[in-house]
Amino acid sequence: MKQLFENTKAASRTLAAISDDRRNEILLAVATAIISQKERILSANSRDLARMEHSNPLYDRLQLTSSRLDGIASDMRNVASLPSPLGRVLRETVLPNGLRLKRVSVPFGVIGMIYEARPNVTFDVFSLCFKSGNACVLKGGKDADESNREEVALIHEILHQYGVSPDVVTLLPATHDATAAMLNAVGYVDVCIPRGGRKLIDFVRDNAKVPVIETGAGVVHAYFDEYGDVEMGARIIDNAKTRRVSVCNALDCLIIHRSRLSDLPKLLEPVKAKGVEIYEEESAWGTEFMDYKMSVKVVDSLDEAIAHITRYGSGHSECIITQDESNARRFQQLVDAACVYWNVPTSFTDGAQFGLGAEIGISTQKLGPRGPMGLEEITTYKWLIEGEGQVRE
Image (tube, rainbow, N blue to C red; front, side, top):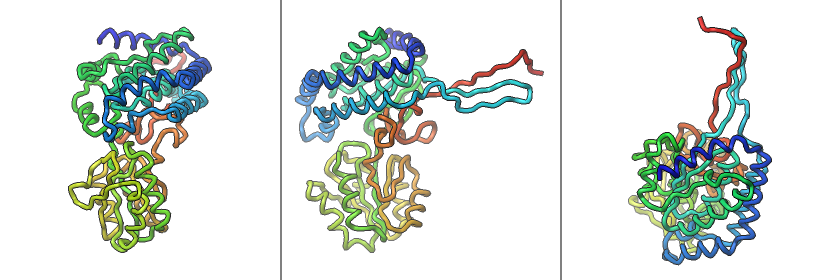
């Protein structure tokens, strides 16, 4: 395992010599290959799916389809079309002693990614890391191992064609030992990003010796205010809950003002028609369902709604449905989350939807990146200092 890390670290240093135009050309070639090689990817994915029960909430995350591969290829083309995040002058100044200082954006170096049954992440991470000059070490879950291996094999084929070391993308075995090795790869992995459920994220944070950016786990709420519009609310709740129930921005709990309880049947009618089970028990609050399940909480005020989110939310995405601007602004100001919506479903928490091309994850922490992480969020910076022989007194 150590040799894999050494190879990736060495390969990461070669990326600086590749121009942005060349990077874009390679990304477009991979996107084209995703479309032309659909059958081999879908065949591998079908073997993964055959080992999972269809009723498993992770089945939807694991499944690749022709249209989903079209979307993945489109996102990769979008990444290629974006401006390079490298070499940007973030700050520039001249000191009284004549020293010229610049703070310039640069890659992290090697990004480690640990993820579960999400084969789309393999392509997303590659595109963002390659565009931003980072090498990547991938550790997927065993549920998606055949899909991930076929995808990385395709990427390696394109890299070979363009004379780029395939070691800039390394897929580790789908074992617990590989996870431990990643978390202890000090000197080789510059930052590790876990993308999955709360259990995975907590394990990575608690055991990593390399720096970690927490992403993914989402206990998501929508608050239907006393001034909410019923038809709008029903659409928002339905889209937030049922567009894809297994994703981290899916709605988990509807909070409703007590004065609007008579509207609850209309608000829930669309989701109930799609088989969503409703829970009113306190034991269901704070649960990330990733399934056709949702809890309901009744409150007497906006402040009580905010207090509920403060206690049970995960800092991911929260929503208020109201026609009252002052209530909306108060909600957005006081709710502590990466993304806070007003009359918009939380399903929009996504790098591509935010214009980032794709995302490497959605950060729920406050130190460093927060929310959908695109190209800029996976770069760091260094200071460049120039002078004419000045010395410090």
